[in-house]
Length: 329
Image (cartoon, rainbow, N blue to C red; front, side, top):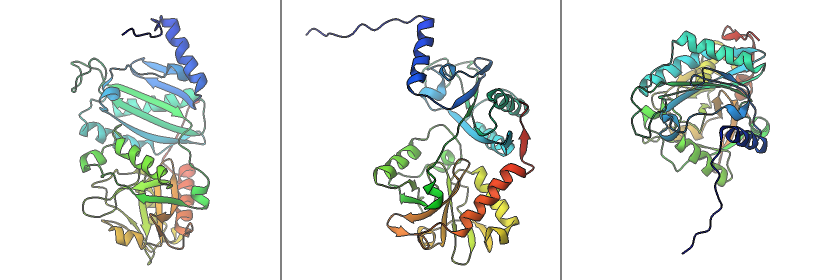
């Protein structure tokens, strides 16, 4: 049988760059600056923000990442995120490309090159290119990448009307993988896709003991009928930097937060569903109220006062705390 196929061109260097620019013209993105240790520099053209296809982070998911926020020309809480980044690297058997201080400086310089005073920072570490094997290539150099971009956005209704979540049918990650901020987010992706397909905004993982885990890319917390802020233990879920900071802020400002105390412990599904408020916490979503879980209304079905108070505390902290680093534009 004769097979008729179009002739596929063999591209020259200028053609590749042209095609990459054409791709970005079809799909514009808010990517403002990108550092690559493989390029040994920063680029501001999104079409040039690329990685080798044989990098282990691409074809095996052997990589980690973390985030930080740019608020009013300053970077918020980057040191807490870097601490978690380094722990994730150790668990993933990834070599650091340089010292912690040098990585921090690269993040700051990339933010400066973007010229943006508000946005998000995401940075990655890979074991590098060199083969398509399961294990990293011999003598592979770790790849360190930093992106300054517009950040994840959520509908305003999440905050004014509340979020609706479902119990996902996908199993929670094993603790080792859950506490490591690796690039393999397949369970998280599938959970959110499932939720969207069924008319919800997001999902919630439940562990094998029937305790609450986390959501797709954020933590969850609850306010009991007695006003105690409850958060699941971090031994089987990601230690959210935003969650940890909010727990500190709530403890130090109980009256303003509207809570009678703060506890971090196992939370059964039954206890969680009976809560007065349910919250999603994360660096991108910040603090969003959850008003429905499966077919059950949480509290009175409206955003509660604690979610509003914690959001105000966090936003104030992001603009005026001692966790800010000025960017040298």
